[in-house]
Length: 253
Ligand code: ADP
Ligand code: MG
Image (cartoon, rainbow, N blue to C red; front, side):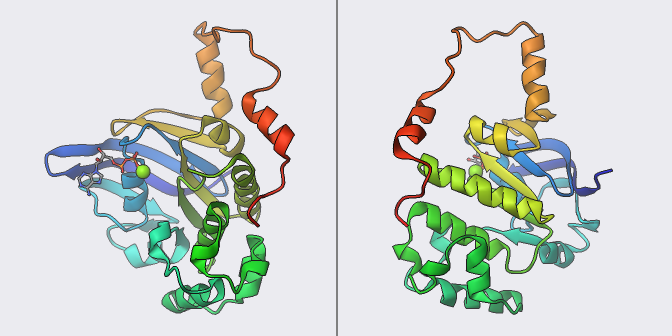
């Protein structure tokens, strides 16, 4: 039986008079890739950042690995890995220097090259952050979430703006991290990505969770209502054409 590692109960967040998160509840199971989907402004980042202890909540309760967010925020911080926005990195430092910097903040001893290996960036060890491609920056920022050996990592739109090859490469990396037992919570605007990557997804709209199940279950439920795609589906799509023509190997490496 899967264990619950995150439990959110009736979570609300108000910014002034505006309620961005309207009393949502969900559980995340240990070892799953859990997707938070929804249009811009739905409340995804707000929800993630509250769980990450980076934002205050208005009401509701959150438990992370058995620790209550209100009474044991420091315990919560110890078991989670948080991704910084790209602007959070000193652009002129090398990857090894940045890893030493973060390791110092976490009070952890790390082997930078070993860590870079896990995200396939060992050959960029002496490169500056600003010299990396978009996909490499994302991989590096995922590496930094792993410094404190977290049980859970949070990835907020990690593949936004990446080309199809880099996106697929990141899926492999995320699966790899999960296969080592780490729970992953991810937000994305790409439904194809959520479908192949996520064990379960919550769809959030205007601060409410309007669906929560496996991608398969949600698709089956829609089909059961009599929904049909307007056109006969082709055996491939334009992204298949693109990958077929340009190959799966990463660019800008
Ligand atoms: P998402 O990540 O799903 O796009 P957010 O959680 O970033 O959504 O934002 C949810 C809503 O809350 C949006 O309407 C946004 O404009 C608003 N919001 C987010 N942060 C703030 C803030 N610091 N002050 C006021 N409103 C905010
Ligand atoms: Mg967001």
